[in-house]
Length: 112
Length: 113
Image 1: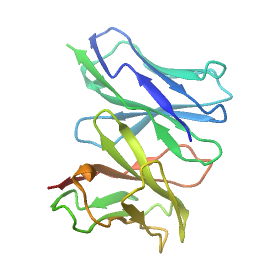
Image 2 (image 1 turned 90 degrees about the vertical axis):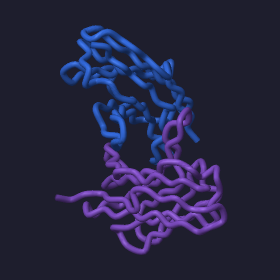
Image 3 (image 1 turned 120 degrees about the vertical axis):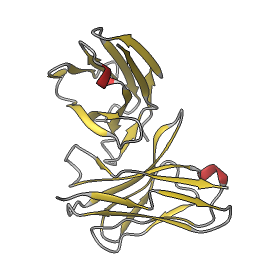
């Protein structure tokens, strides 16, 4: 199966600064990498995703980059706001089985 | 609106009892999944189903079972609850194998005493 490692486990930034969360995966056949945001007491929700044939994708203040050779991908949040405070999960879809495997999560705190 | 719902949202039970967590989706999605969420472990896959009568074990399936008798429902059963199964459980679904987004239910918090 797939193994997804995520770092850091906690991250605090000042409002307006950037935040970067990194993930590595083990299965070179994985082809889809979503990021989910989970606010306190809520369900995880997709915020951005990237497929293996793309190196970077942006959506307003968030972006994801993928390095297939190194088998790692990163979430970048610019101009952070207090409402960005949440737990963020990366995931990889295991190509041979179509299941999603998640990282252990990063608790992001944006300090006003 | 189409939705995915879980019940109960909160459950306290005793060690050794059988517990069933319900998951119901109205999107007519073929793929359904059960995850457990624990601090330091993220979301771990318990069981999943690609369609009616299809069930598969995930990475942490011991002590759990599922059944898929129709498209809408994937109940998760703990045959004999253990304290190690205290967790928050999330059901999720998506239309099919090559579609990206997983849609999660609200979660069910289970405490085993």
